[in-house]
Length: 96
Length: 454
Image (cartoon, rainbow over all chains, first blue to last red; front, side, top):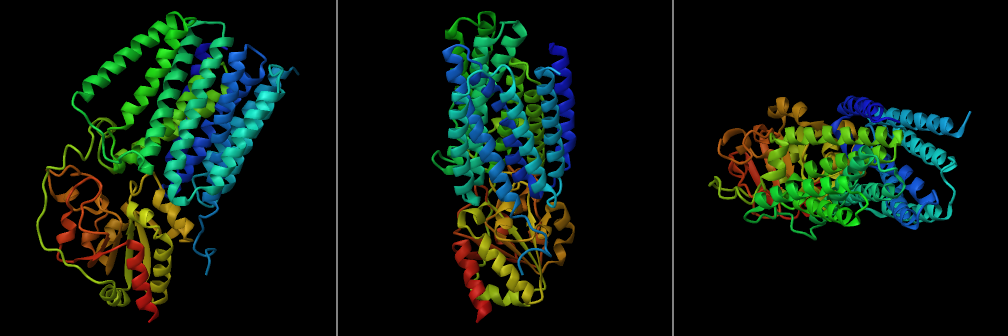
């Protein structure tokens, strides 16, 4: 794929990101941060490719470490976000 | 249909799930489902990649997934809500490190086109700086490293030199990617840069730093996506990059400072010599505070980092219920930069079962501040400091604050008479309508609660 096409995708995604995030209320900023942080663990896809493509040993080694760190980021990020969001309650449904 | 098309269709589905998931985060009612959709997107992306024809060996992938998954589950389960800023900082750092490693690994498989090499260099630089920057931020939040800005003479010159050397090393690396010495130099310098960028930043500015590192971790993934020609990395990475930038902007605006000012000024250390205020402090006991609260019909609670330190969110909720039972209306006023990360106070109060519709933003509370009988300031200092409004030479002049001094009575719960994090004396403490209640925040509130039950 050529560089111009990828850059085109990049610009659209950045603008979309600005639009989406500006609408998130302050009360959800921490879950937003940990949730978007989990999305940045998408680098896991690249890590899996490096670790599993059967290339030179060095690439496999680096890829495996990358898989470990990216998975911590992804799994930990989504779970902790879910845990936090589970605590947000509206007045009627909150306790007594 | 061939596999490549299928994989790319899977990526399109993943991107849609990420986008819809982020959109649903804009309301507390749908946020949890949004997060689940976003995690499904991640699952789809990883599964279609594993099914792709490029993957021939699974053992190392499985080892990595199991190890990382186990650590992630433990970390997410065990962390205390008060330690959330530290955890997010660490996760950011791991994401950055993973992107750096992906960039390095791509060196071995790429054809060596200049554009690819440049993006590999970017993935390494941003990833490395995110990694060490996050580790330093984690240390500062944990107080393993001092929370005060670390400054030394000639810091600017050293940093400028560092930028020049990084630029030169990156160019050399791109011209001759097969020379591993350049690779190691670039990695080492990116690590050094991360440390240098975060050490001069004070603890009170941490919300900005964490937002910024969040953005970098996305940009690193994005650069890695260019390096390995993968669209989903580019799309997801830039969504995160954009999100971090927006949060950074919101945080800077809430402190009335430019990003450059936060990053380079070493706030606090250099400005402690600024105006100090003199006056008489009027202390009050929790028992007397009870009599005032019992008569109050409108109460606003302003939490700050001190509430997190004292773990006082549960007793605060208890006090809120007692006051409500007594016929008073209770709301919370949360400043955008209260605490150590964006939304820090909201999460703590949510943990204590405080409904989120009672948490008001600064702009909602300020216009009706005169209607509150009592404003309780709990572990907040700079965000309620009237010097920001009145004293032109104050280092925080111009920062929007919660105007608690306009309430009829202000209770400031404070451990002792030390100044707040930024080392600024707060004229609020000497106001006619201010009463200082000294002691541990949690203990003080517990004592007021005991009075209610008597």
